[in-house]
Length: 399
Image 1 (cartoon, rainbow, N blue to C red):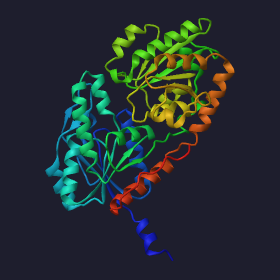
Image 2: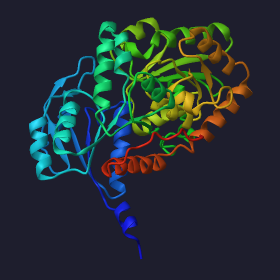
Image 3: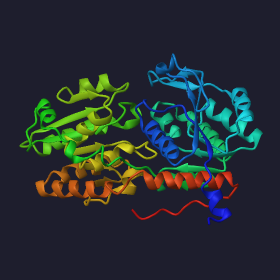
Image 4: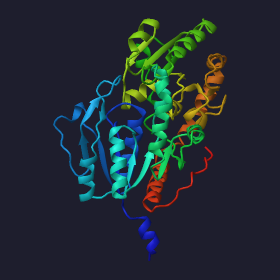
């Protein structure tokens, strides 16, 4: 017969997830939250979602599992909404149906109102640090606001029971800035969706590439914070170093810098936003993945590229630092060292056998990075917050 302690541990929780972004929106935060949401529901928990009303929700109403709030357009992100403060609405709802714990994924007005309502009602809060807003502010010419933004984020997260961060490097950076009660919750990848067998000869032919040619892939939002000038420079360096190879740059994604990039890279192929099987086929039909971003809290696309069997070139931080062993299953450069980044990309193409081995090792590593263990860990962190435990940040696990 099960003990009382076991019965408590298996009791389903009422969990409320508060976020500005959620599938079908295309970005790393939405992808992660969609996985966590579905994973918790599959484990038998009652999961309530609170988010702004988006364009696809015009005919949709709220119910017990979904609360749609008003929002404002988010500058630079067409179609997305920044949630308005909804404290009184949340108070009324949670007084009727009290959650066991909240997970606040975004720190805007909606997240702040949820934090205030939870503190008033004595509901435990776990927060997630998903986006480096303070680094983005520098990229958009708002450096003077960086200190204020960091102060606000620290104030916000230090009022939660626990703050979850996706990478060891991010945790170290936040600890240096005096964020408290931090714990690691990494990210996984669907290694059945993102798989080398999704490679399509027909797609490569559309790109003008034969089997022996090299497709250099980039996947992500085309925005200033993604350091896309280095994408252009590193690709030009590859073409200069290997004029005998047929190299083609394939850019997957959309954003405010697309028009500029199309002018700067007239020979590149811009595929726009892709999702699901189409995205998986675009990854797998490539050979090398260039990821020059310096602002990622994690970088889900790195794991997707590894799972697809690509040779990844990235800076030694966030997901790349966690999952890439230099010159084994990818290549790394010290953050900000553009010359080293270009050198790493060139090394990858020196010998055909080098690239082949790196790609095989990339796939092998990523195939072990599933979501199941991460969702189980997330459930445990939420249970700990409900129980009022003073959580100790978990040590990084071997990968």
